[in-house]
Image (tube, rainbow, N blue to C red; front, side):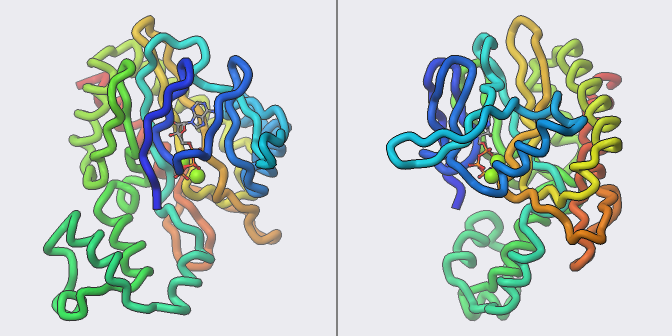
Length: 284
Ligand code: ATP
Ligand code: MG
Ligand code: MG
Protein backbone atom coordinates (compact mmCIF):
# COMPACT_ATOMS: atom_id res chain seq x y z
CA UNK A 1 0.00 0.00 0.00
CA UNK A 2 1.40 3.34 -1.02
CA UNK A 3 0.90 6.25 1.31
CA UNK A 4 1.05 9.67 -0.18
CA UNK A 5 2.62 12.30 1.87
CA UNK A 6 3.99 15.75 1.85
CA UNK A 7 7.01 16.26 4.02
CA UNK A 8 8.93 19.42 4.45
CA UNK A 9 12.29 19.62 6.08
CA UNK A 10 13.75 22.72 4.52
CA UNK A 11 13.19 22.09 0.81
CA UNK A 12 12.29 18.42 1.13
CA UNK A 13 9.04 17.28 -0.47
CA UNK A 14 8.04 13.65 -0.94
CA UNK A 15 5.60 12.75 -3.71
CA UNK A 16 5.42 8.97 -3.33
CA UNK A 17 6.42 6.12 -1.11
CA UNK A 18 5.75 5.04 2.43
CA UNK A 19 5.78 7.71 5.03
CA UNK A 20 8.86 7.28 7.19
CA UNK A 21 10.95 5.86 4.35
CA UNK A 22 12.87 9.11 4.14
CA UNK A 23 14.81 11.22 6.61
CA UNK A 24 16.49 14.57 6.15
CA UNK A 25 20.27 14.49 6.30
CA UNK A 26 23.07 16.99 6.02
CA UNK A 27 22.45 19.87 3.67
CA UNK A 28 22.01 18.66 0.14
CA UNK A 29 21.48 15.03 1.09
CA UNK A 30 18.61 12.76 2.06
CA UNK A 31 18.35 9.34 3.65
CA UNK A 32 16.13 6.63 2.20
CA UNK A 33 15.39 3.45 4.12
CA UNK A 34 17.93 0.82 3.11
CA UNK A 35 17.10 -1.83 0.55
CA UNK A 36 19.74 -4.20 -0.75
CA UNK A 37 18.34 -4.04 -4.26
CA UNK A 38 18.35 -0.25 -4.46
CA UNK A 39 21.73 0.02 -2.77
CA UNK A 40 23.40 -2.32 -5.29
CA UNK A 41 21.82 -0.39 -8.16
CA UNK A 42 23.04 2.99 -6.93
CA UNK A 43 26.51 1.56 -6.32
CA UNK A 44 26.65 0.19 -9.86
CA UNK A 45 25.15 3.36 -11.36
CA UNK A 46 27.97 5.47 -9.92
CA UNK A 47 30.30 3.57 -12.31
CA UNK A 48 27.97 3.75 -15.31
CA UNK A 49 27.30 6.29 -18.07
CA UNK A 50 23.95 6.92 -16.34
CA UNK A 51 25.66 8.53 -13.35
CA UNK A 52 24.74 12.11 -14.40
CA UNK A 53 21.06 11.13 -14.45
CA UNK A 54 20.75 9.63 -10.96
CA UNK A 55 21.13 11.22 -7.52
CA UNK A 56 24.73 10.94 -6.34
CA UNK A 57 25.13 8.02 -3.94
CA UNK A 58 27.05 8.53 -0.68
CA UNK A 59 26.91 5.07 0.88
CA UNK A 60 25.03 3.53 3.79
CA UNK A 61 24.50 5.05 7.23
CA UNK A 62 22.88 3.76 10.40
CA UNK A 63 20.64 5.97 12.54
CA UNK A 64 18.72 4.81 15.60
CA UNK A 65 19.42 1.17 14.65
CA UNK A 66 17.97 1.66 11.20
CA UNK A 67 20.00 1.47 7.98
CA UNK A 68 19.64 4.14 5.32
CA UNK A 69 20.99 4.92 1.86
CA UNK A 70 22.50 8.39 1.72
CA UNK A 71 21.99 10.25 -1.54
CA UNK A 72 21.84 13.66 -3.14
CA UNK A 73 18.75 15.78 -2.44
CA UNK A 74 17.59 16.67 -5.94
CA UNK A 75 15.63 19.67 -4.64
CA UNK A 76 18.68 21.30 -3.15
CA UNK A 77 19.09 24.91 -4.24
CA UNK A 78 15.68 25.18 -5.86
CA UNK A 79 13.26 27.84 -4.81
CA UNK A 80 9.73 26.63 -4.19
CA UNK A 81 10.19 23.78 -6.66
CA UNK A 82 7.48 22.18 -8.75
CA UNK A 83 7.88 18.42 -8.86
CA UNK A 84 6.37 15.60 -10.88
CA UNK A 85 6.93 11.88 -10.29
CA UNK A 86 6.38 9.78 -13.44
CA UNK A 87 6.57 6.03 -13.07
CA UNK A 88 8.21 4.51 -16.17
CA UNK A 89 7.52 1.17 -17.84
CA UNK A 90 4.61 -0.86 -19.19
CA UNK A 91 4.17 -2.66 -15.88
CA UNK A 92 4.92 -1.75 -12.28
CA UNK A 93 5.21 -5.22 -10.78
CA UNK A 94 7.96 -7.80 -11.13
CA UNK A 95 7.46 -11.02 -13.04
CA UNK A 96 8.06 -12.86 -9.77
CA UNK A 97 5.30 -10.86 -8.06
CA UNK A 98 2.86 -11.89 -10.77
CA UNK A 99 4.02 -15.52 -10.57
CA UNK A 100 3.51 -15.49 -6.81
CA UNK A 101 0.05 -13.97 -7.14
CA UNK A 102 -0.88 -16.56 -9.81
CA UNK A 103 0.17 -19.41 -7.52
CA UNK A 104 -2.35 -18.35 -4.91
CA UNK A 105 -5.21 -16.68 -6.75
CA UNK A 106 -7.41 -16.32 -3.68
CA UNK A 107 -10.33 -13.96 -4.24
CA UNK A 108 -9.70 -10.72 -2.39
CA UNK A 109 -12.50 -8.55 -1.10
CA UNK A 110 -10.18 -5.62 -0.33
CA UNK A 111 -8.98 -5.48 -3.93
CA UNK A 112 -12.55 -5.67 -5.19
CA UNK A 113 -13.36 -2.67 -3.02
CA UNK A 114 -10.37 -0.74 -4.38
CA UNK A 115 -11.45 -1.55 -7.91
CA UNK A 116 -15.09 -0.44 -7.58
CA UNK A 117 -14.00 2.72 -5.82
CA UNK A 118 -12.17 3.73 -9.01
CA UNK A 119 -14.56 2.16 -11.52
CA UNK A 120 -17.86 0.58 -10.42
CA UNK A 121 -18.22 -0.90 -13.92
CA UNK A 122 -14.87 -2.73 -13.90
CA UNK A 123 -15.77 -6.03 -12.19
CA UNK A 124 -17.24 -8.87 -14.26
CA UNK A 125 -20.61 -10.35 -13.31
CA UNK A 126 -18.85 -13.23 -11.62
CA UNK A 127 -16.56 -10.94 -9.65
CA UNK A 128 -19.55 -8.87 -8.64
CA UNK A 129 -21.34 -11.96 -7.37
CA UNK A 130 -18.27 -12.88 -5.31
CA UNK A 131 -17.59 -9.28 -4.28
CA UNK A 132 -13.96 -10.26 -4.70
CA UNK A 133 -11.19 -10.36 -7.34
CA UNK A 134 -7.85 -12.14 -7.53
CA UNK A 135 -4.58 -10.28 -7.06
CA UNK A 136 -3.22 -10.87 -10.58
CA UNK A 137 -6.48 -9.58 -11.99
CA UNK A 138 -6.19 -6.48 -9.79
CA UNK A 139 -2.55 -5.93 -10.79
CA UNK A 140 -3.32 -6.10 -14.50
CA UNK A 141 -6.47 -4.01 -14.28
CA UNK A 142 -4.56 -1.31 -12.41
CA UNK A 143 -2.02 -0.94 -15.23
CA UNK A 144 -4.83 -0.72 -17.79
CA UNK A 145 -6.68 2.24 -16.27
CA UNK A 146 -3.67 4.56 -16.36
CA UNK A 147 -1.32 5.25 -19.25
CA UNK A 148 1.13 2.57 -17.97
CA UNK A 149 0.02 -0.29 -20.22
CA UNK A 150 -0.51 1.83 -23.34
CA UNK A 151 2.11 4.60 -23.06
CA UNK A 152 4.72 2.99 -20.81
CA UNK A 153 4.53 5.63 -18.09
CA UNK A 154 2.07 7.20 -15.68
CA UNK A 155 1.98 10.32 -13.58
CA UNK A 156 2.11 9.43 -9.88
CA UNK A 157 2.06 12.80 -8.22
CA UNK A 158 2.64 16.51 -8.67
CA UNK A 159 3.29 19.41 -6.38
CA UNK A 160 3.59 22.99 -7.59
CA UNK A 161 5.49 25.83 -5.97
CA UNK A 162 5.15 24.54 -2.44
CA UNK A 163 1.44 23.74 -2.77
CA UNK A 164 -0.27 20.53 -1.79
CA UNK A 165 0.50 17.21 -3.46
CA UNK A 166 -1.93 16.24 -6.21
CA UNK A 167 -2.24 12.54 -6.73
CA UNK A 168 -5.41 12.23 -8.72
CA UNK A 169 -3.84 10.92 -11.91
CA UNK A 170 -4.68 7.21 -11.67
CA UNK A 171 -7.05 7.37 -14.60
CA UNK A 172 -5.09 9.68 -16.88
CA UNK A 173 -4.54 7.72 -20.07
CA UNK A 174 -4.58 9.80 -23.23
CA UNK A 175 -1.87 11.89 -24.80
CA UNK A 176 -4.17 14.95 -24.66
CA UNK A 177 -4.71 14.56 -20.91
CA UNK A 178 -0.97 14.22 -20.34
CA UNK A 179 -0.23 17.27 -22.49
CA UNK A 180 -2.74 19.29 -20.46
CA UNK A 181 -1.09 18.11 -17.26
CA UNK A 182 2.39 19.15 -18.46
CA UNK A 183 1.10 22.53 -19.59
CA UNK A 184 -0.44 23.29 -16.23
CA UNK A 185 2.53 21.79 -14.32
CA UNK A 186 4.94 24.14 -16.13
CA UNK A 187 2.47 27.04 -16.28
CA UNK A 188 2.92 26.82 -20.03
CA UNK A 189 6.58 27.84 -19.84
CA UNK A 190 8.11 26.70 -23.12
CA UNK A 191 11.67 27.19 -21.85
CA UNK A 192 11.01 24.66 -19.08
CA UNK A 193 9.28 22.20 -21.41
CA UNK A 194 12.21 22.50 -23.84
CA UNK A 195 14.72 21.88 -21.05
CA UNK A 196 12.79 18.78 -20.00
CA UNK A 197 12.67 17.50 -23.55
CA UNK A 198 16.37 17.96 -24.23
CA UNK A 199 17.27 16.28 -20.93
CA UNK A 200 15.13 13.28 -21.92
CA UNK A 201 16.82 13.14 -25.33
CA UNK A 202 20.30 13.03 -23.82
CA UNK A 203 19.12 10.53 -21.21
CA UNK A 204 17.96 8.29 -24.04
CA UNK A 205 21.41 8.34 -25.63
CA UNK A 206 23.04 7.44 -22.30
CA UNK A 207 20.50 4.65 -21.70
CA UNK A 208 21.32 3.11 -25.07
CA UNK A 209 25.01 3.05 -24.15
CA UNK A 210 24.55 1.91 -20.58
CA UNK A 211 25.87 -1.50 -19.49
CA UNK A 212 23.70 -1.25 -16.37
CA UNK A 213 20.56 -0.68 -18.42
CA UNK A 214 21.20 -3.64 -20.77
CA UNK A 215 21.40 -6.02 -17.86
CA UNK A 216 18.64 -4.73 -15.58
CA UNK A 217 14.87 -5.01 -15.52
CA UNK A 218 13.78 -1.56 -14.35
CA UNK A 219 10.40 -1.81 -12.63
CA UNK A 220 8.57 0.82 -10.56
CA UNK A 221 11.30 3.37 -11.17
CA UNK A 222 10.40 7.01 -11.76
CA UNK A 223 11.55 10.05 -13.61
CA UNK A 224 11.47 13.00 -11.26
CA UNK A 225 10.80 16.30 -13.06
CA UNK A 226 11.83 19.34 -11.04
CA UNK A 227 11.78 23.01 -11.94
CA UNK A 228 11.48 26.30 -10.15
CA UNK A 229 10.23 29.79 -10.86
CA UNK A 230 13.74 30.89 -11.85
CA UNK A 231 13.62 28.46 -14.75
CA UNK A 232 15.97 25.76 -13.43
CA UNK A 233 14.65 22.50 -14.84
CA UNK A 234 15.94 18.94 -14.68
CA UNK A 235 14.85 15.31 -14.87
CA UNK A 236 16.31 12.49 -12.77
CA UNK A 237 16.03 8.72 -12.62
CA UNK A 238 15.01 7.64 -9.11
CA UNK A 239 13.67 4.68 -7.13
CA UNK A 240 15.55 1.46 -7.88
CA UNK A 241 13.85 -0.66 -5.22
CA UNK A 242 12.53 -3.04 -7.88
CA UNK A 243 15.35 -2.85 -10.40
CA UNK A 244 16.76 -6.36 -10.69
CA UNK A 245 19.58 -7.89 -12.70
CA UNK A 246 18.07 -9.87 -15.58
CA UNK A 247 18.97 -13.57 -15.88
CA UNK A 248 22.62 -13.64 -16.90
CA UNK A 249 22.14 -14.78 -20.49
CA UNK A 250 19.70 -11.97 -21.22
CA UNK A 251 20.37 -8.59 -22.73
CA UNK A 252 17.25 -6.47 -22.45
CA UNK A 253 16.00 -4.13 -25.19
CA UNK A 254 13.48 -2.04 -23.22
CA UNK A 255 11.66 -1.04 -26.42
CA UNK A 256 9.62 -4.17 -27.10
CA UNK A 257 6.33 -5.33 -25.56
CA UNK A 258 6.40 -7.36 -22.39
CA UNK A 259 5.53 -11.04 -22.51
CA UNK A 260 5.67 -13.15 -19.38
CA UNK A 261 9.20 -14.51 -19.21
CA UNK A 262 10.98 -11.97 -21.45
CA UNK A 263 11.67 -9.58 -18.51
CA UNK A 264 11.16 -6.56 -20.75
CA UNK A 265 9.97 -3.43 -18.94
CA UNK A 266 9.14 -1.06 -21.82
CA UNK A 267 11.31 1.66 -20.28
CA UNK A 268 12.38 3.10 -23.63
CA UNK A 269 8.83 2.94 -24.95
CA UNK A 270 7.76 5.05 -21.98
CA UNK A 271 10.65 7.47 -22.28
CA UNK A 272 10.01 7.88 -26.01
CA UNK A 273 6.29 8.51 -25.53
CA UNK A 274 6.99 10.96 -22.74
CA UNK A 275 9.53 12.91 -24.80
CA UNK A 276 7.18 12.91 -27.78
CA UNK A 277 4.28 14.16 -25.64
CA UNK A 278 6.35 16.99 -24.21
CA UNK A 279 7.53 17.90 -27.72
CA UNK A 280 3.91 18.14 -28.85
CA UNK A 281 3.10 20.56 -26.02
CA UNK A 282 5.98 22.79 -27.11
CA UNK A 283 4.89 22.87 -30.74
CA UNK A 284 1.15 23.00 -30.30
P1 ATP B 1 7.37 3.96 -4.08
O1 ATP B 1 8.12 2.67 -4.30
O2 ATP B 1 6.04 3.80 -3.43
O3 ATP B 1 7.30 4.83 -5.31
P2 ATP B 1 9.68 4.73 -2.43
O4 ATP B 1 9.60 4.60 -0.95
O5 ATP B 1 10.51 3.74 -3.17
O6 ATP B 1 8.22 4.83 -3.02
P3 ATP B 1 10.75 6.90 -4.01
O7 ATP B 1 9.79 6.63 -5.08
O8 ATP B 1 12.20 6.64 -4.21
O9 ATP B 1 10.24 6.20 -2.66
O10 ATP B 1 10.62 8.42 -3.59
C1 ATP B 1 9.38 8.94 -3.18
C2 ATP B 1 9.34 10.43 -3.44
O11 ATP B 1 10.40 11.07 -2.69
C3 ATP B 1 9.58 10.83 -4.88
O12 ATP B 1 8.36 10.87 -5.60
C4 ATP B 1 10.17 12.21 -4.73
O13 ATP B 1 9.14 13.18 -4.51
C5 ATP B 1 10.99 12.09 -3.45
N1 ATP B 1 12.42 11.77 -3.69
C6 ATP B 1 12.95 10.53 -3.81
N2 ATP B 1 14.30 10.59 -3.97
C7 ATP B 1 14.62 11.90 -3.98
C8 ATP B 1 15.86 12.63 -4.08
N3 ATP B 1 17.04 12.01 -4.23
N4 ATP B 1 15.82 13.98 -4.01
C9 ATP B 1 14.64 14.62 -3.87
N5 ATP B 1 13.44 14.01 -3.75
C10 ATP B 1 13.42 12.66 -3.80
MG1 MG C 1 8.74 5.62 -6.36
MG1 MG D 1 10.05 2.36 -4.67
